Every structure is written in C-alpha cells, then in structure tokens.
Length: 115
Image (cartoon, rainbow, N blue to C red; front, side, top):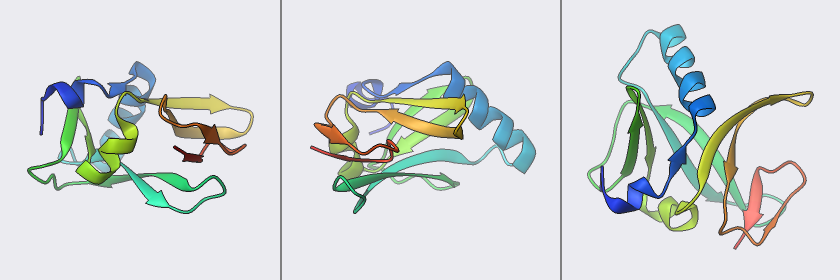
C-alpha cells in the first residue's frame, strides 16, 4: 500500500518529521520508521499508539517525507484515514498527537477516541 492515494490521505506534519529525524539521529538507525497504530481500550474506546519499527509489511500504508517514513497497518488505517500526525510541545510535556477527523469523541488527554 506504500505510496498509494490512501497513504497520501495521512498528513505527516513538519514538526513530526523533524522530531522523528532527531530521534533517528539519536538512535543512529536510519532504518527505523514511525509506526502509528490503534488499539482497543482507553477511556473513549480506542487508543493511539506510536513505536519505532525497522520492518514494514507489504500491506502497510506509508508516507515518506524528507527521508522519514510513517507506517500504518491496514486495520489501524481504516480509523486513521484523513488524519494528521503531529508533534506538540507544551506545558504538559511533548508528544506525538493525532488530529483525527473520524473521531466523534476524544478523552481529555487526547490519546483515546471513539468513532
């Protein structure tokens, strides 16, 4: 699914790309990709997860920007289509965040949602 129209629906912001680049430099491993996924649970029904992964499945959606790759598995993609992956720094700390137009409700921390 790499480089498909579906993957293009995922927005990988400059802030997120720059943070991933700096983390990859710290790890000294340019083979790592930022994987975004959905799990059941959380106060609103589903939770977002982030991890670094060297592997990419044939059916993963991928967005590549400036030498950094964001990957999403097909099951998670159905909930993330049209979303924006961003990185925010603020008084409550710094974190990757998802701006998901598919979410009908979110929890106060922004890490869980329902459709």
